[in-house]
Length: 254
Image (tube, rainbow, N blue to C red; front, side, top):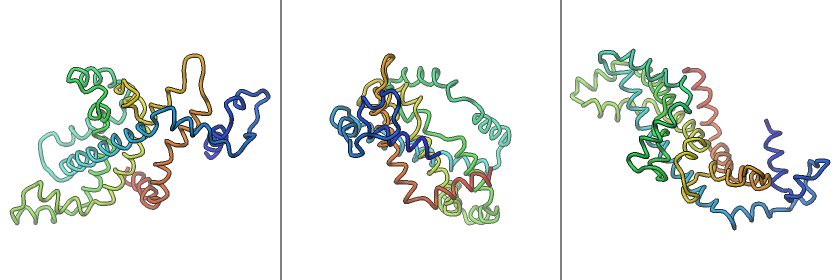
């Protein structure tokens, strides 16, 4: 797994002419060649693309946590007709390729003027089906006696959700947040469809401007890819324990 990352780093440090050299050379002639990174920040709005990614990812994580925890609580602790069938229908969405929904979603967002806007780019990321499943699994671990005792004391359902259920499911909350951050930051297809101007592109979409039908600027693509993965890499370094726990919990609960 480290080989693609190493190849990207070596390519980002090469002069453009070195990439097309025959026979191919693996190591750059000058290890201190940083012109590709300078070009990225001086000739392209990569700082704006990074800001867009941060905004879109933050909005996606907040909305996903809110709706996934609410839905998880409803499926785990509320009693209503057709609950199991509705939950199975939601889980069935996991098997649906996202490409199927792109065209109808685009037409819907375009009809209300949300194309090339932050709400539109967040679009299909405002909710996560996997998050609903994870939060339901954690909510089911809360003893029903806690919920019933709060109801007997006269607490309303949203108060019980907020003050009883959420504090007891913090690990699930963090699991959904970590997974959603990774998914939303790396999302490509939907932001590509919704962002029609360079100013609204996310970092993953912005990298495609270095590719045309006739030529690919490999060195800029490699340098941009390294810049785009830096925020996730920093998150992994500082939240390593939570990220690993998230992966383990998804495996156990799944």
